[in-house]
Length: 120
Image 1 (tube, helix red, strand yellow):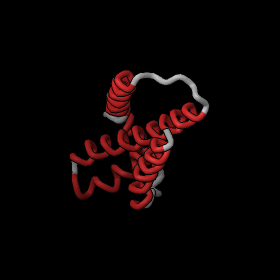
Image 2 (spheres, helix red, strand yellow):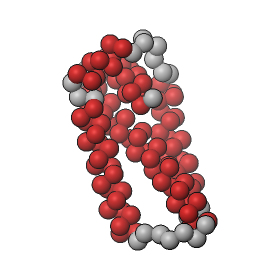
Image 3 (cartoon, one colour):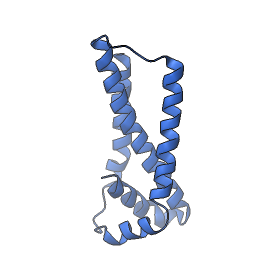
């Protein structure tokens, strides 16, 4: 699923931005993945607070979050660099996702994460 979002965003931005489109696509897919995992984390944090399950300290949670963000960014950088990107581009159908869907997905994930965060 994320590969389709990456290729669609790359093909959408490549005519206008040229080589910078690859960097923008890397940042976009990292943002989408971080927003999605943030949504899942906020959901489980709200769920566990309702069940009165023990929590970790805020300092440890921030450090863990920063490490997860760095891991996701580096993983995506290694995954979509070079051959993998070329293979995905060759295998992808020329059917692109609509631009509004590419924008709405991360915004929806962030909005839902904020809703779950309020429930904590």
